[in-house]
Image 1 (cartoon, rainbow, N blue to C red):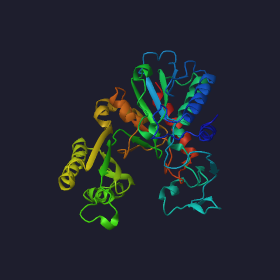
Image 2: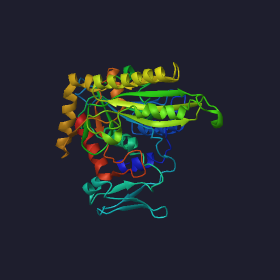
Image 3: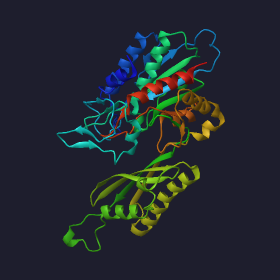
Image 4: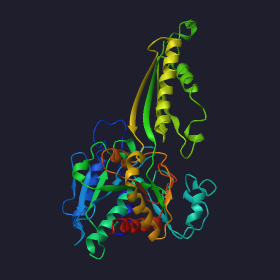
Length: 404
């Protein structure tokens, strides 16, 4: 199979992860795809391909003759898709020789991907774009990465003309809910360094990411019949709104870019008796990241002083940290990727990730792991697309990275 055929096959698997689940993987459907990947890997000659009890897939491509002493390189991608939009019954189609105009994804529902909203579409005139029917996401994040890695693997298993050291392949579940590295066996993986293939636009190369935490603010109120509420009611909804109003209004995702951090209210639910606010906290700078968490604590203390101790409960949990801290002493692996891109005519785009990848946590687990592009755009939404030519170029980049 070529990379496009693989990708179209993989997106037919429903692998949405579930943040409310208590199992690993969070959804059993992910194991269905994992089993298929193991089957394919064994068919191409990767004899040790295996899925473990948690749904992680591992496999090895042995070094070519004379290259046994070269560093072991890992290639990692994740199998799950975001729960931001349905990943079930995806109906992809290929827009051949894209003409640069708006793309009607779904005529019946009047869903149109417009160039005025997505200026990067102009970069792909004349190429072939894989799109959705507008009712689901596409799943290029990260089934494109899976397809690119296994297309490379098949090439290597069929040819001895590409000299390379030992290559380790790993596919993870639950990356989209921040659990992709929870049960990753770094010792078993046994690579000197690795790359996640989980980025966006072709050429993206990232070794800096946010420090990340989640914050849950639970507000306890007192509900009284509105007609008798004077000086008695403590409306948890209004107090929750007060908490949010004390956070800097210009430090939200919609107001920030580049290295600028933010706090993001992702959910508010409840009633007068109890209301729960769920936030994510992000910053590239560790000191500023800690300051943001401290701000949540100060606001909580201030409002408890106003409304009574225990009215506001705050829980903050760190999710992952900036991999730059672990990569800076291994910059040769970043240079290796830059040179590979240039060899196939792709200009590297080195920029911080305004998010995270499995590679961030893996780097702190002892496996230095920068992130590479997949070629896709508009992840997690109905307007997601990926150019066929970008996926093909990514396979070439991976080949250059692993070459001795």
